[in-house]
Image 1 (tube, one colour):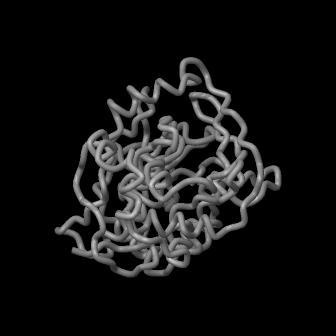
Image 2: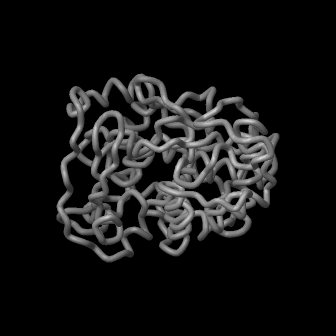
Image 3: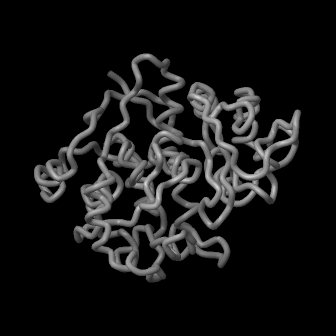
Length: 326
């Protein structure tokens, strides 16, 4: 069996493609440095493609204050309080320069820090947990090839009881079950590639899927949009429902948006999605953008109106522009 990489190449599958129990994996490998040599060697050139697809820089760079690339400090406002993204440059003092390959892998796949602390899911490890071991290794190689920046991390400003990090232990136990991406044998390679880009690397569902009161994504509303997305913006339904989603969009409409940021009606995306286009989707290969479009249009349509209803004949899902963080 083969798995797609963000660069569009195929490699032999490097890890299990089924659900596994996180505690068992940690017992066998996650807590043992001896396992580090078992993982693939990273390639920085391939890792740049992973980095682009995962859009690490948008959250980990404080553009509003002219912050250095990946030096953290960006404020991420949520219903649970304000998170400040950490420094993930290879600086050994304030960044992740002292992390081993296994430390990096545990963070992305298991949501755990090198000291065992559990990360808040504002860091989308709930999506990244599907990454292949090769992509994880390549991503680390690329990030560690970038200039280190010494900048101390800013503490989060969270509401009680979320300010107690230990609350993440029961949350992860109840709601987080790492599952590696597995291609669907009933779908073609292009659609499977799109699924990996959308659901794992691109973590689109972290914004486009509504959550329950525990902050858990609603599986039955996958990509159906939500009224209160990151930083308070309306995030639209991107399932192929013709009335409330993007069912009237062609594959070319989707790829054009991913390249230029323009919607079929000539409006343009704003907010967080504008950054996604600038830093990520506009830099993907044409094949990867086609894969994203093919996957989105293969999904079951979900009727879910987010924001004001669109006008008859309008190809936008609700206005775009300043109203929507597309």
